[in-house]
Length: 192
Length: 192
Image (cartoon, rainbow over all chains, first blue to last red; front, side):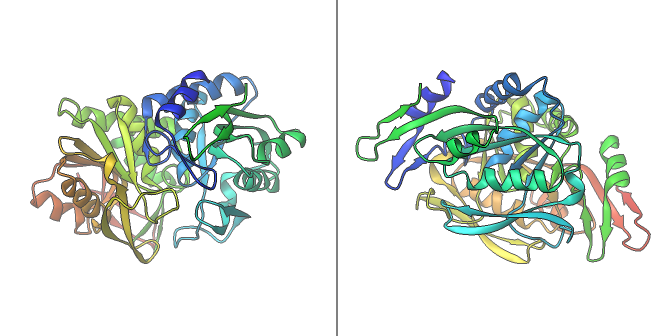
């Protein structure tokens, strides 16, 4: 998605340790009209496949997930990173390491919100090592539901997550695939 | 909003300690088409007042905030509950006690995303004691920006937050105002 690549180059900031900061439009401030365009792209890619539910993970995935869900006219479920007094004991769970927060969370979703027969599209803001996506896929498959695919806003294609999951046969659509980032010059290149 | 009151009665579950669980449509699974209707209601209430930014707090506020923001055509910013390696030191912050999680978080927003002259609509899923809303108002006012008002999906009107903040002069619109909840019978009544 050319407009997204341009936006990343214009607004993104590269920091050491392969950190790409896009807080101006994706995961702190959200450019809602632009994210609606991203949601429309996901709809183009995954419509006609019977998607009846969108799954994401708190917190940064929620915005793009619900803005995508409105084109499909379906519900969104987000996996939670911690247990609250409001959540039932009856959950599907999976370990997900966060490199940003440097912790491993046992992410969870109440069982009643994922069911056999569900055709699930997973949506998330970033794909890098694939930890979150692998965990979300496990939740869906533990429920006996089907993963239709995954829509990712920004993939760090130089890290292994996307490649490994595509090799397993999952349909993964990333709207921008970063090939390289240089913290010294700020230069960002994309996979064709 | 009559449809919301009906949905709360149909899908909500009341637990001891004034817990109202609405995970089927608001804060675990999100009924996106229905939440779009809620966003449209907020737009009716606050359009024409110059709103140029919507502010919420992670995680449950994000969905309704961005679905509302699309009607205004504006950006959304969400306050974060913990510091990540991606967030700058230059933040506005406020203490917010969460009764659900039983912790006090220092919530924060990077200064560049709230500016003097901004006319901010605050959106959140729940209003009870008013802790989150009070914290968000502090962030806006610390930035020299203006609080246009707050749109809340469900207010527990039997708790003091809404009343106290309205008495201070803030325009607060709650789509459903719960007057009483009974954990034994499951009965829920609403303010007229």
